[in-house]
Amino acid sequence: MAIIAIVGRPNVGKSTLFNRISKSSRALVDDLPGVTRDRNYARGVWDEKSFTTIDTGGFIIRDDSLFDQSTREQIFHALQEADILLFVGDGKTGLHPEDSALLNILRRTSKPLFFSVNKIDGPEQQGNLADFYALGVEDIYPISSAHGFGVGELLSDMVELIPEPPSPENGEEAEVSEIRISILGRPNVGKSTLVNRILGAPRVIVSPIPGTTRDAVDTLFERDARKYLLIDTAGIRKKGKTTEKLEKISIIKALQSIDKSHVCVLLIDASEGVADQDLHIAGYIQERYRACIIGVNKWDVFDPNLKTRKNFLEDLKWRFRFMPFAPVLTLSAITGKGAQKVLPTVREVFEQYSSRISTGILNRALQEAVSAHQPPIVRGRRLKFFYGTQAGTRPPMFVLFCNYPKSIHFSYERFLLNKLRESFGLDKTPLRLVFRGRTQRDKNE
Image 1 (cartoon, rainbow, N blue to C red):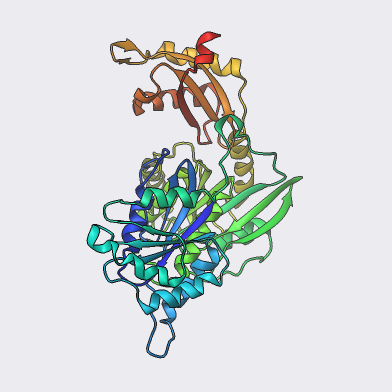
Image 2 (image 1 turned 90 degrees about the vertical axis):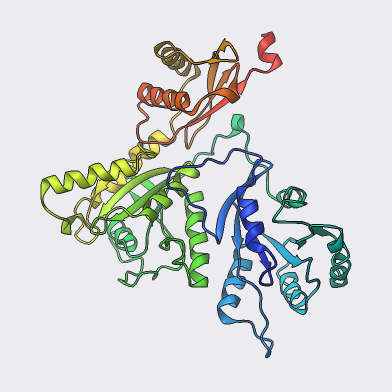
């Protein structure tokens, strides 16, 4: 997924623009239970193209012409990670020497650079645009991040540089030689220890200090004639806890690991219970339609009382009820007890995640579902489903053609999802349903 870094001086409106971009959408972006959009990074969609946006710290020059060290780290790492750079100037205060200094740095990256001037809220600010042309910039985008003026045009031009996503009809992912697994979770829940336990060797540095892992470490290995790519990621901290600039970039790396994974193992510390941030991470996983396994680590030191354990697991399943397909494994990464179940469960989940259902079987299941629960009446007419087809895998995606695709209530969509899971035995994988109206060609056939 492409990364767009927003850079500029303090108080030019970067965060406001960041928030507007992350909430703007010309394609569906799900609001999922437990999902929060951190102030410093977010997923956005424009013209059906997905990207990640980074909101960097304000660029400051000291009297000795050196930046503040923490800001230097944040900006430089953002520039390194980004595919597209978005400069933001201040249309009210006009051109500033720091704008020139920052622009010189951006130009040295040789990455695509878009130049915007914010706070153009009226004719009185238009005159300040002329000052910015002195920087030798040919195209300047006058915008108002507060009101949205010009932001759409800016986004449309930026996403032109992002490759076209595969269409649902051609969304089949190529065959893979290995199953890609990300180990995710809050800092210090035992991710690196679990990686070492699975690998059977100390391939990853393990430390009790939260935040030891700064980057994703990919390890390719083979087990029982099957290849795996295991990814150990940096811990994703709670919003407001990511004070270290470098650590904010490590979060981006963790989110990128989700994007390139097939199965995510979300590790939870049994001794601390389910935290809100665990739900946030699960939201990130589901938002990207990745398969998921919930691993409850440190189960060996948890309360041995059977009733207490049962209540813990029931509460966990309730809090993760928006991911009912995610298997729950109890384990101890240190002792290895239960850890041997991880890879067999990954294989089972991946098989469902890659499932393909024939059109005939799909349509019989769709007919049975509709017969069991009649669709609601829309505009005085009964909602009618004509046929369905599978458009892709990882996850299985079904396109259902009907007469009122935009009027299907989420409760009926949930009913259909549950019936399809039951019919095909897909209880351990996310599913996607896409509703469409029939084309003229369909009507004539």
